[in-house]
Length: 223
Image (cartoon, rainbow, N blue to C red; front, side, top):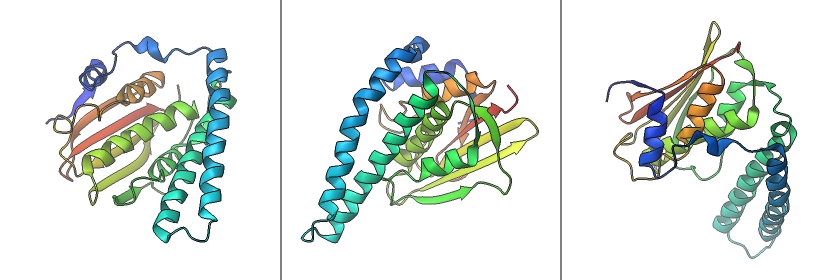
């Protein structure tokens, strides 16, 4: 598969995965966002509390404790997205972020412990003003798709760089690549396309030297 820069391609792939191609589905009012966040806070807090309480039980095996810790960590990750959405979503304020942190957080999500990670964040900060929730969702979806394609024991490589005013996040996997994974595993790529469009960039998909797919999200840091 040669490299393809997605414009309509993002919508096409999302449609094949079973999603809608209507970009308008992303339009959420501030009031709707606050309502959703409010409704999510309590159940997420309850899940975290239950997991932490179960870990404290002395008769729980080490394996079960590890799983419960993963549940607690995943719940905290979800809660942080809710908090970020409450803080920035309704006001639509872009905040200064370091894309290296965004990539690092996406790779730290529990559930992919058997993945062999290759993370290259460079030595210099990759800063830009952006919606932290949107970019975190975009990068998390790129990483999630790569991990699903690679599978247990597979390799996922994340590279973050900035050249002039352009920032790039590359995610590669050793899996079969797009077109060879079960339908539905590409859900979320529309979010990646939205992030690219929001910040004057593009999404490029091609073959990875690892044997699977390579997805590059390019963003303009001076929009």
